[in-house]
Length: 104
Image 1: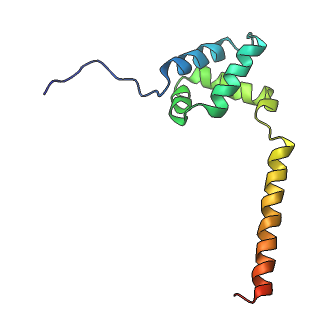
Image 2 (image 1 turned 90 degrees about the vertical axis):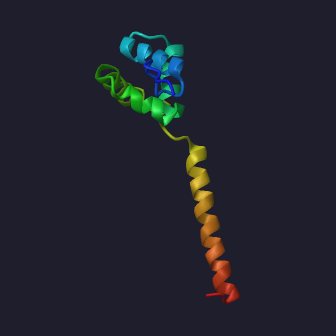
Image 3 (image 1 turned 180 degrees about the vertical axis):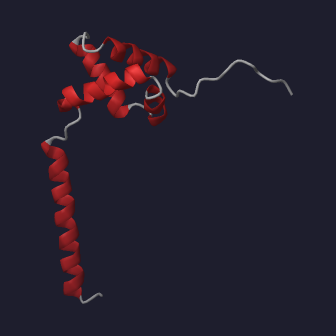
């Protein structure tokens, strides 16, 4: 049994994490496309990678600032709220049907 002294990265997407960190450290002096990349990483990046990003205090402070300033990237659209409304209506309709059938 051999011991590998080379440390392994915990990141799932090492390149994506490094790219997001670089872009966040340059924020707010980034292009619109780079803003989209940052938002994509923060919204859909692997939780382990986002967690590892939080270990870099400078990058994490910029990420928090990005979330505060660029709120439109993290807002829910009308389809989200319509889906919740439809689920609620379906739940109420199901409960009414169960009550009408006499199942308790």
